[in-house]
Image (cartoon, rainbow, N blue to C red):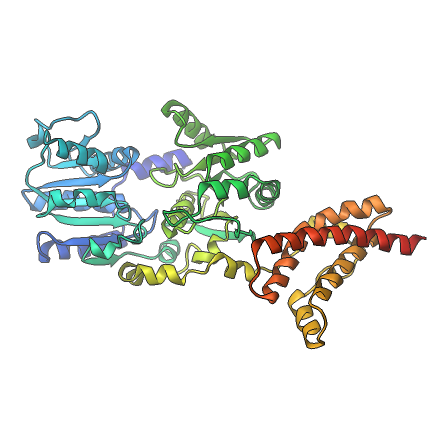
Length: 508
């Protein structure tokens, strides 16, 4: 069976799996026994079939109750997908979009699908009213926009559905709007049962101390663009892609449009087939780009935010997180784009260039969602910060760089151990730096034929120098950012001088 036929069969087939049936029974137990205005939250990982589950809930609810159902989403693409799925369950439904001003035919429908903002505007205009609503289903319930409509459905049973029951706004925790949480199968369980593909994650250490956190609690686009558009990060991205994802259909997630465009130009110049997509892309261009991405086996698509929800392309084989995020929800959403299984696709690759796996854990690690639901502030406070993460980095010289220093037996230095040694001997702390500079100078001189070559080799040591300085300042204690930056620049000046001195001593 081809991938195309398999995907078509999935779209037509509405057979429920055992874990989905079990969760539906749990939800109906609450629907049947809790108060009619009860607020229930349901969690299931991306790829677990949340839309299938709540479509069956709508069908079964309407067969048992003489009331209406409203399904709320936050994006028009999700409205269309939800409506299509409901049709597959033989639920006649109507989409309330920006073109709908009134509902003279509402008695012909028992189910309505609407974007939160659109429905709120229509209800506020008092030109539209939906009578006798017994059940409201909120897709992607971790977004806070739905709160604007809760007063409109005070007597309705509210069912929120999400992969991550953690509010997008820490000041508005989900337990303030939902009475309880039902947790579905874990990601690892769905992998073990053959419903999700297995992810293999490759993490590349990235210094994030230059990033700033915005009012929404996540890293700002400006500081992310500044970091991820620099030459070092572009080279790291290209190296990671060629090392782990070459020839695979790849999605690259970025935090800013400028970064994504830089990525596009970098890969294009290298001769790779790549397209760029963001929220300013026209509907026609987006459709054409996504069609190209679907049909091209080794396609690379670099994007900004727009493909985290409402996008399903099962043929994706590699996800590159070319950004850092403090949002657990976004982390799961991005990786989830590659988790769909296909014949011949049981695994996919995740390349992490934002220390995200070190911050949140691996995608398939167990998560205590009940704890997060009840005490989100404690969970967020327990996350490792960037400084702590970077303190544990262990620099490993890339193989391509190591080959340039092949005549040197040992290119490493334990800065922390060296600091302990000089401290115990009551020597100046700067002797650690002086010893490190001398070792680097020796490496450059003994692996080159002349002085110019030695100084050229020193340029390859930038990451190693950064790593050593970081360890050194950690040993010193609290230091300013300006001092750390000065140490790096001073180190490089001293290295250039040391190379010249050593070369002259050995040759003259």
